[in-house]
Image (cartoon, rainbow, N blue to C red; front, side, top):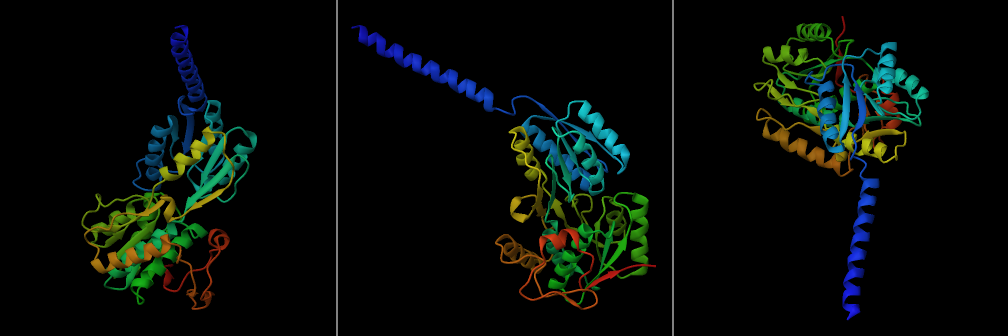
Length: 366
């Protein structure tokens, strides 16, 4: 008779022990249970409808999923001021710092050396360290697809491109876009005007007006700046728009076609989670279309069906790995073969040595 009571008692004890073990294990592994303080320093605004806002909106999503407290610092200049800002954030208990501007790179490196226990993520940077990862996306793939849309849309064969600086990142985007234009329309050309600024409205507006005055038959315009001035001006003149960074179709409903856009949460969430798990490794990340970090905004109703079909075919080739944008043969603007047939441009050259333009790019200068 005693066994009848002993067995249930043993079972009950095993269950209790299991629950206790589960609770201890859960407590030790639930790394998002407590709030973690991190920071993002930005060269622009969280409401710029462009580069800055793409990072801000993504980080908000990541913060909600990982229980983060995020301190945002806007309009941080690329000088010693940024180091002072980062030092202040670290003193306030920040464990991770995200810097969203290429030009902040040297200052991130200086602070990282002093604080080996703090982890840093530097957008579009090239130099990583033990506690610093650099990250970017292969947005040139989406630039290429958006170029197809522009090439199909133009009636004059003249497409405008307002761009900040002639650095490899920007040159890479211009070239990818132009190759897309040429895929759709071999006779079209892309006219580029430099702003010498990422986000100064006056500089970007001046460059746009100058470009349109010099090339008065431009009927499609795109940009690589954080200012909305190029799109605003072109929209007011009835010019078709290809945006960048965010989908701004709702702002320009009459002329917006599409935009290469960022889904930064698909980078931030897994890699900040690695920090929380103490699995961070400093390295360079360059994520392609299959990562979900880069995308093409939905093509609006202004885009012709032939362009939609060609974009879908080319995107599928990029996704399955049978093609990437800088596959030869590719000529430069002097009609010299730069990439031979059957060859492709290396990641290193794309990241560091893109100092030439493909055939079809025309730099608009005084």
